[in-house]
Length: 313
Image (cartoon, rainbow, N blue to C red; front, side, top):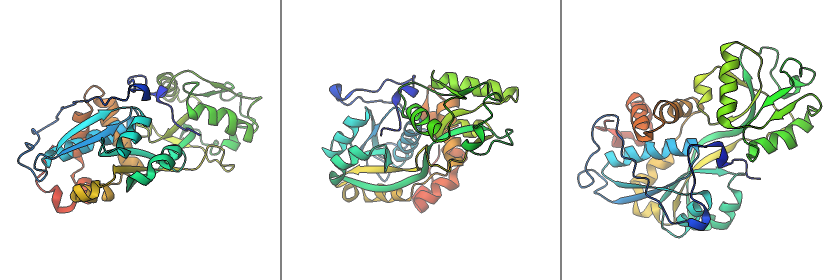
């Protein structure tokens, strides 16, 4: 089952598989010092291409590593494409890295098709998941089970996102039947911005609300939220988010492969990065990534060790 759907990112239009020509994103923002020239740093001007799909966390971490690698002297190109041509491009060696592989469920079919031609460079987050979520002030609602019999409290509504999203189908076809909520609740199918607006309004007035949400998301940094326990496992298990490289990438760029293998972000760190990139600097994601890096030097040192010395953002 495809657990994600690009419709929930209305600000971006992905390039379909039928038009899989790679598009240079060319985002060259900067929140501080100008990046080291390609001929000066450790990268020596070597080119690295990163495939990027229109998912919030991928936009954030892609621009984060674009900024870091350019500071290290690499010539980085961001290729903005859809999921299928990204995996195909990796397998054919046209793309060097992809930062947002969801396994074992979301990208299972692509991994089965192309995995033998790719390098697994490790997971940077292990808590990618679909959720039913309430504000933390809903003290008596801790589990999806607790929603049963409380339909009147929530106006008989679970506030959802786009009708075509995997999260919507999982909530409607799996979770609601599993907990006997179909007769009490209607899943409102609208849009991600509409869901977030409803959440913001309810929290401002401390009103009851339950929404469909997912990790990673900037909302967890903006609000005090509580994911409902799911004893039936109806929302699915947590997934890992991995970095994949083309075949031979580690041999060509051993230092970068080592950094990728050490790369990890906690839920809290990722939420903060998403806020910087997708909320505070929506029109300049690299500027947001650089701001986050400048405020979290110890995190970068954890990934790169002495190689992070002297980097300024």
